[in-house]
Image (tube, rainbow, N blue to C red; front, side, top):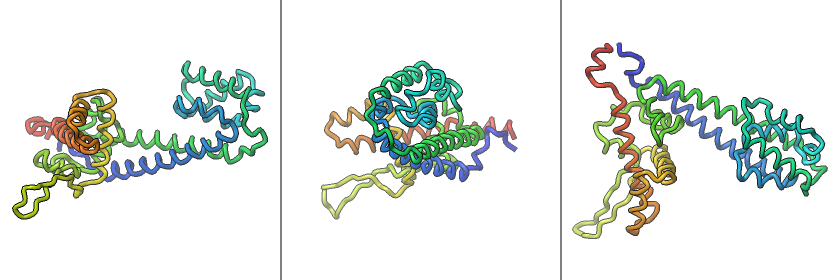
Amino acid sequence: MFGLKTVEPVRSNALKDLCTLHKQTVRQLVKYKCLLRDFIAVIFPELDKVLKHSRMGKSVLNLLLKYPRPQDIMAASDAELRQALLENVKTVNSYQLRSLEKITQLAQTSVGVKDYPVTAFQQTIKALLFYLAQVHDIKKGLKTYLKMTPYCKLLDEFGYDTVGLATILGEIGTIRRFPDHKHFVSYCGLSVTENTSGTSINKTRRLSKRGNSTLRQHFYIMVLPHIKHKTKYAEFFHRLRDSGKHPKKCMVATARKLAIKTYYDFKNCLPSSQEQESAA
């Protein structure tokens, strides 16, 4: 028998199911965030300025859950506000404390509706806290499964995160299915087809969408951090843009290159035949 790190993942279905659950949970999270902003626009409109420039983390949500109105925040002492900020949060950094000071100042001049009912507002905050906890637990479960595979070392490389790596692995099961990178790219729906008619020299090339739509979408998303951090793939993207290519075509070409890179990254994680024989 091979050792734990040398076998292919036998739980690809579990990874796929968890990734689907993560996607659906994030959708619910976004829905409740939008609902929360609608309530804030009525109860405490000035707070939207703070939330636009900061993450809607547990600390701010805990504060609003206990003190939903501006007058509630003004009536509370600094110690009570800080205690609400610390509730169910391991650490509070200086940025969060500055946000608390800013919220306190905004509450003094707020033009929100003072007698607006806040029951639905508080229930929305509770739902948000629940979905945030769900997303955290799902990521922990994904990481546990990834540690059982030889591909977990890729989490230390730029461009791979827990959900992204689990998504690829859940969809393909094993990289050994593909004899070369061309088959893998085709499975990801990123191969290019050519349309010809008879003896015409006017040929059109377009993206084939016969492959896996989940992987195709994932590799599109993978392009964005590379563009943001100006990697060599960003240089490739901008080189195509400068040559007059449509932005969508540039995204597809860059995503295809990242798919090829992913194929060989996965291949390099597999143990060699000698290591497999020694582990047997």
